[in-house]
Length: 359
Image (cartoon, rainbow, N blue to C red):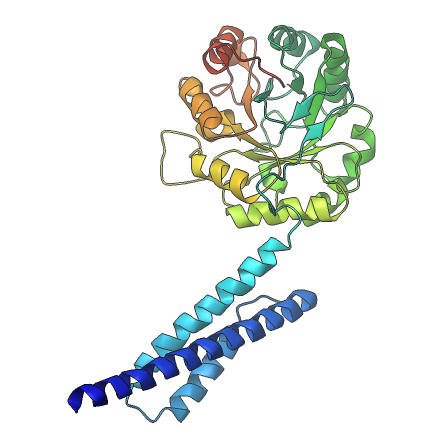
C-alpha cells in the first residue's frame, strides 16, 4: 500500500516537473522576444528595476512552504538563465561572430598577399617613423625575410604630451617612399576621423589603436574606407567590448578587419601589460576575423620576445606584430620593447623553421 502511494506521489512530481519545464521554456521564448524588442530600442538586456519588481510580486504571492529567500534564489537563477539566453542570441546576430566552423574572413591585398588564409603573417617595423635612414634600414632587413607589412607610424600617441609624438604626415610620406622601394604595404595608426582623407594616399591598412578602440565615431569612419583596418584591443577592454568595437566597423560597411591582441593591464609589474593568450584562442573560436598577437606592447621588453612569439603562433593566431629598430637604445619611443635587426632575424628563425613567413 505504501509503495503504491509513493509511486503515485512520484508520478505527480513527474507531471509537475514536466509542467515546470514547459513553463520555463515558454518563459524563455518570451524573454527572447523581449530581448529582440530591447535590441531595437537600444536598451540593455538587464533591467534591475524590473527584476526587483518581479521578486517583490513573488514574495507577496508566496504562501509557502518555501521561504521568500528560497523563492528569490530560485527565480534569480531563472532570471540569469533568461538573460544569458538573450545575450547568446544577440551575439549570434553580430556580423563579426562565427556562424559556422569553416567561416573565415581573409584579407587579400592587391597583389594577392593574404592575412587569415592559413599562413602565419608578420607585421613589423619601428615604433614610429623617425627618419628615412631609420625606417629604410629596418624595411630592407624585413623585406629580405619576406615580410610584406611595414609599420609606418606618422603619429605616435604617447602618455606624456612632452614625449615624441611622431612626424605626422611627413612620416607617412617617408613610410610610403620606403615601402614602395621594398615592395611592402604601409600600416599606420589613425588618430582622428579628420585624418582619413590625407592618410588614404599613403596607407594600405589603417590601424585603430588601443586608445581609440571605443571611439565609435572613428570606428564608423573606418567602416567607410576602402582599405582594411587593424583594430587593437584596449588594455582594459573585455573580449565582448573588443568584438563590439569591430562590429562598428563591419556594420558600417567594411568587412576587412584584423583583430590585434596587445595585452591587458593586470597587477603584474614585470611586463608592460599581460599578453592574453586565452583571448587569441577565444577570438579565433568566436569570430571569423583574422587575429594577430602583439608581443611588443604586451610585454614592453625585448628579452622575452621569442617565447611570446612562439606562444602566439602555437595558440592559433593568424600572425604576429613586433617592433624593430636599427638601434633600439636610441629610439625616440618605446626603446625597451623594440628588437634590433639581429634580434628580429633570431626571432623569425625560431618561429618559422622550414615554414615560409608570409606577411
